[in-house]
Image 1: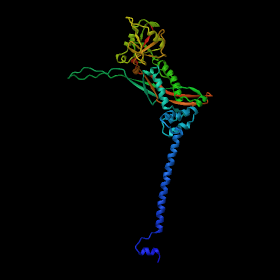
Image 2: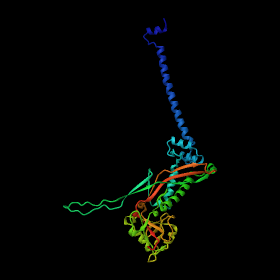
Image 3: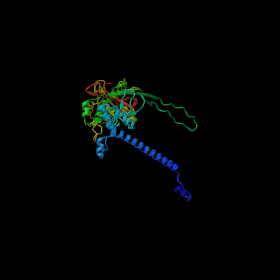
Image 4: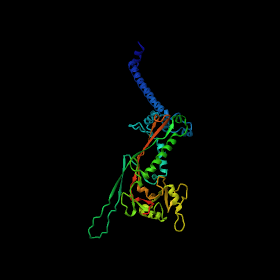
Length: 392
């Protein structure tokens, strides 16, 4: 009698070899599938890690080292400026970084956010109308300003008399188109290859200086043709007969000179009370040198310097902005402006800034063509007055 038969006769279970093998193979397949899944996940993690470290380099050993190395998007942007390697920027787009967005039409890229912020900071702090004007960010090609010119009618009513219809205000619509402002600094390819300095900072500084000069001139004297419309480009009319669409002026009483300091006081009070509280004088350095010498009837200077560093000088108690694009004192010149520019002048701009790298047009130099969309115009003609150096 076999051993198997004996065990069966004793009541013990007899294992089925075929069933046991099938169970073993099933468990082995599950184990194999689990191992393959883990290996696949590990491979994906390693691939993602390789993509990230391709730009970030080895992990820094300390916080200071990490700060010196810079963020991945900064390193990629500097590499782009040095070499024009578009794959670096596209790689960061795949990683979801906010460094750049390709401009399909011309292959341009948005400037690194920190560079754009640095440009905006310099523009805001520059001696320009921008620092006192109303600045808005738009995504369209123009910006519309609605101005209420008239007063809403009103009247006294009694308990029994019928209400009388009153006048409705007049709404003026001013459209400010956006124009393209450009700058094109250049550097030699060797300098870009070998330099260890902050390329982001250098580029931001060069762009900001060129933009600041171009903007400052346009916001005052721009003719509106492919550039903003300056407030002095509008028709200037005697404040006594001033109408909407014109800038009112006060005459000094003497052609090409001050008749007396009273002209400045007349200029201040030519502005409505609602604007005067936020008024600012605007003039160039040469005019400021003349105004600084003026005294009142008691021999006191009308001009006073700021009491703290960074504070503007004041004239008759109002701050003074030195804008070099204002005209010099001359016959018939509108050399001094006074007004609430936050209400009177609006600057509309797109928040993005683009840069194109051109290594071919000026060999051995590399050109960086930066563009920005900006527009400006008078948004309230009642908020700005000028002092005209004329007899009447």
